[in-house]
Length: 248
Image (cartoon, rainbow, N blue to C red):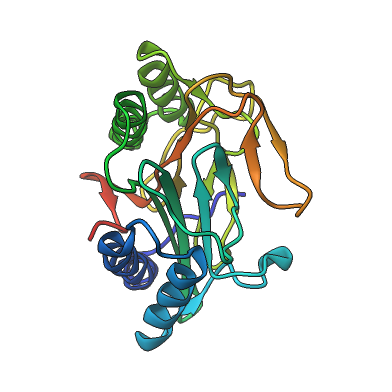
């Protein structure tokens, strides 16, 4: 069942989402060669707690950290540790918060120093595809309009959309109905209504969309070892169009 949120509930979701946006903004200048992923994780958690929010991912289904940090060929759910970022890496930061019973969730992929032309194009296209999807999150559209817009933009530029992970509804649970694929699928295809709140999150690969999970049980990587990027926003559907709650 897809929950339609009231105006007051969306206000609460906005408060949680703004903390996510602020934390990710705080992390941007820290993404430099030599910093460890654990240091980024610690900064994110401390920043969220300082603002009265809990890190939503820590302990969620057993995940051991507050910030998902995925580097280069890692798609999503990378676990922070002692690894240091290097010049030329790309790094995806996925963060969520829980505040007063409501969740926020967003992700960005950043360059570490100077990156290659293909990596830069991957980041640009992935972020653009997110906004192409958000544009379709309008009352009366089918859910599939979001998925199709993302897939079309990505494939037009020669990249592939990950099939194994999808966006989702969000509210008083981190993952709610509906699932929001970033590709065409025969899943249920409801019409969008005012009050729906979604986390839309294209994950895009340089090469094949196929993936595998590492031995840690969490980190998803591209099967061909090529790069992957990830961008995400929490949005609310209103009578005046989509509103991005995780915008800084």
